[in-house]
Amino acid sequence: MRDAVADLVRDGDTVAIEGFTHLICFAAGHEIIRQGRRDLTLARMTPDVIYDQMIGAGVARKLIFSWLGNPGVGSLHAVRRRVEDQDPGPLELEEYSHFGMVCRYVAGAANLPFFPIRSYFESDIPEVNPKIVPMTSPYDDSDEVYVVPPLRPDVTIVHAQRADAEGNTQIWGLLGCQKEAAFAADRVIVVVEEVVDDDVIRRDPNRTVIPGVVVDAVVEEPFACHPSFAQGYYDRDNDFYVAWDKIARDPDSLDSWLKEWVFDLGSHRDYVEKWGEAHWASLKPGSAPSGEVDYGSYT
Amino acid sequence: MTDPGGDYSKNELMIAASARLLAGVENCFVGVGLPNIVCNLAQRTVAPELQLVYESGAFGARPQRLPLSIGDPTLATGATAITSMFELFAFYLQAGLIDVAFLGGAQIDRYGNLNTTVIGDYGRPKVRLPGSGGACEIAIHARKILVIMRQATRSFVAKLDFRTSPGHSGDPEHDRARGWSGSGPTNVVTDLATYGFDDETGEMTLQTMHPGVSFDDVRAAMGWEPKVSPDVGETPPPSAEELRLIREELDPQGIHTK
Image (tube, rainbow over the protein chains, first blue to last red):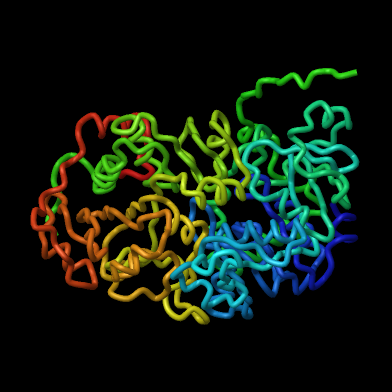
């Protein structure tokens, strides 16, 4: 992880760490904090606790998003301090709706100049974001849509359950827009619970979401999503999401948390060790394997 | 305000009243918290065929525990389908397949427009709220919008600080000419009362007041003079079976219902 972030994430980059509640790579965010990146533009549909931590640590100057909060809990206090009180400085915001953000990634991934959607009608959102523009259909004068511009992150970081060494990546459970954000990016880091042999991937090609051809680095980092989750591997640590609300309310307690859990630790492995085995055992789900399909053998 | 009386909480009354609005509905966009319990109660009572749809991409979810967020892993295990978020918003929502969706917000006006973006000025807000999420497009495309909110003068306002999600415009001709697949907000359930929306003007209309709640209580908790249905009545309290389902099956720890 250290090498991947050092090589591929640069000051001033637009960075997307995607994952919709599921598969949010906290470990990558922590490594970016540890390496002291600055002036990043952070993109994410749902800036979650990970972006509150990164923004609290001062890595970002701008946020591109569609829903800003601690899901199921409440607010992101470090972000709110920057926005409401300019404390310790302003944070530029560029906001969309979920559908608008998804389609920005789709346009970026498909090399399109814009993407038309039926949203934003009679909403104030376009008034505060001039990049959301009304357009009339070239085929029907009475058909109005809004268009959003492509989003092409300098770096996208996605977490997944498994990939082979080439970066052919398989995901199950909620997909978020891991695929779209990866194809849209200039550089891609895939972080996985397990690196597997290529024949594991080839046995179930329908499950491959991101092909190695767009991936620049593969990192095996178990529990890298914590307190987010990896379907089938570990549950969401909801107690931490609740605890974060209290930690982040006070800048000093946020700083102490960052010191204890990020700066004083050398790597995510230390973080896993610090939580302890009993904690990981408590987050382990029961088993619910999928049925297998038969692809057939055609020789 | 007088105590609503009876052996149930305000939230339990809101849940039961909202669930009855889902009678016969086939699919519903669910949020976390109360809407989630409402949909699960409806599935066990008035809408056995109800498919639960979550913006995270879970379609036909069968949560085995109370989901803690709209991306809870329990929504994936056992679902009918998991779609990409693009497919969910484009093929399901924008194409008009969603029957009902729940929305809420920090502010609502008399035409059901909702603010989930800021309190105060956008550039220098007093309170920065989460923003749209999927609400803006959900408000436009889901065939019916149900709103569950607590009622107070700061949330039921004459003028929104920011319009995140459109409701009715106040101009019936304009509303008819929109050509949206959604027909906008149809019902609002609060801790004091339930409202519909006038077919002609699109204005929020008081339909029932909860047991023990007076018109003065309702009026004191909103920023405009509400239109009142000529046959305004009392909200039926939750039945014994509804309360049993809520307490024993849906929220045994009382996280959302106490």
